[in-house]
Length: 282
Image 1 (cartoon, rainbow, N blue to C red):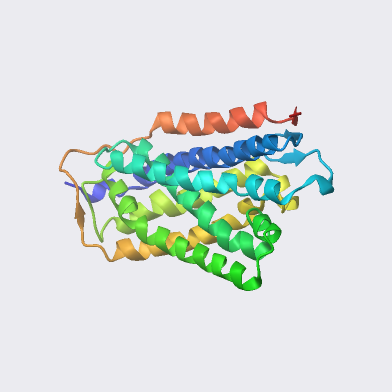
Image 2 (cartoon, rainbow, N blue to C red):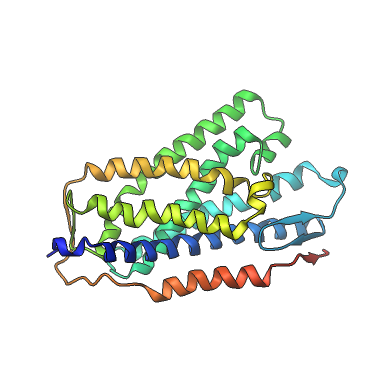
């Protein structure tokens, strides 16, 4: 049975470390999945390009862009990320009863993927960036764009409602129950602090380009706004749950070295290997 001794500063930062590693790993998978889709779809139109760890540059003249190319290149990544988000959620539920902290990777990937898709419909539409390019090239009316933005907003609301139970049950990696005594401790350590630290890590990863390149790093600038909306909804829902009891097996709150090494090893590896532009001529 859970004791108050588990709510210590040391255990707090162990949970933070595990969750932050999951955030970073999920973020890298999502970002480079979109990177890969942009390059592959560009190849379908024989658009030469260069890429590194943060950017894709197209070596074509403005007149070579076609409506079909814009629609496919700037939407395929979002659609695939949306699909992978639900696959990650299914993977998480397959590990529902497992206590291994590594499942936090699937939880974060689901959060980031659904936020990327629905947040893109709302924020990208407003700022005409990312998938917003597609709507411009489709010559949508302001009313149609507003409807899409509303769909994105309600998608974010639905994500907040959908993810409350998975977040609450992820506490079984560390506790035998989740209730009023340990919920603020857990939610802060599992979600809020890793979200802040994870974004700071990614800010440092993309620095200084994130300060000056609004077009390329658009979601890195504004994506956190829609994700905060989701977290507020998740917190509100879980806060009204009755005490959730898991099994009575002993819990040991410890660092998941596999998760931590995978996340920060991949972060360093990509940053080094893709430090210079790589040219692809289709």
